[in-house]
Length: 73
Image (cartoon, rainbow, N blue to C red; front, side, top):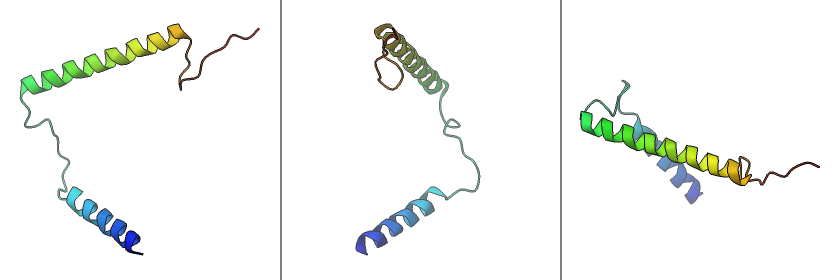
C-alpha cells in the first residue's frame, strides 16, 4: 500500500510539474544560430554513423534485430 501511494503521488507530481503551460513551446526559440548549426552537424554525424553500421551489418550478413542470415540450399 505504501508503494502504491508513493507511485500515485509521484505520477501526480510529475503531471502537474510538466503541465504548467497551455501553449506549445519551442526549445529552439532562444537558441543561437551557432547552437542550431552545431546540433545539425551532430545530427548528420549520428545519421552517418547509423548508415555505416547498417552497411557493416549487411556486409557481415546480420539481419535487423541481430539475427545472422543463412543461405537456403
